[in-house]
Length: 134
Image (tube, rainbow, N blue to C red; front, side, top):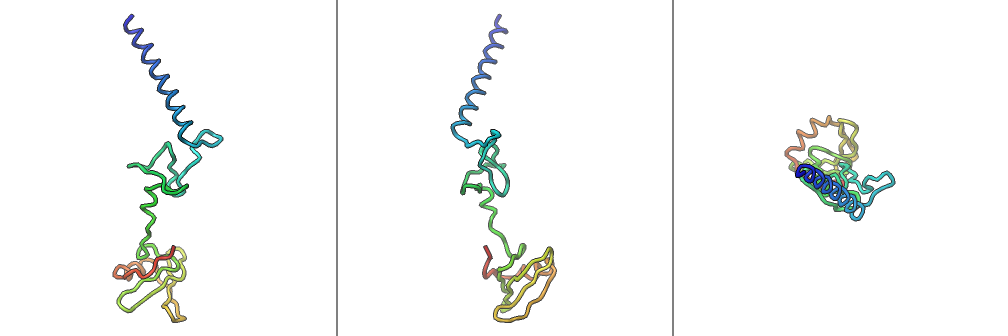
């Protein structure tokens, strides 16, 4: 009789726990028509019920704190049009990026040149960042 009571009690506790989780989800998370969380991070896809490893919170409507911390781009490694770097007096501005090639120019001069990304990165290792494009 004791084992039967114990099994029934365990079943009752599991049912209450399931109901409590469902009530909590309905009260605290915005769900879409399919019953999944409507709020998702635009970068990693985490939502209110599935956080990033190590945890995260919302810093914007569609951006979690883990991805917001990773949003600072280093133009030495990942150059984008509008970035400007300098080594001594050699100042270069990224004009275009096509796959693994970088077109760069020199401020106040009409000339431009192309470099493979790996050569740009080798030059940029020593560079000071003057401007980072948004």
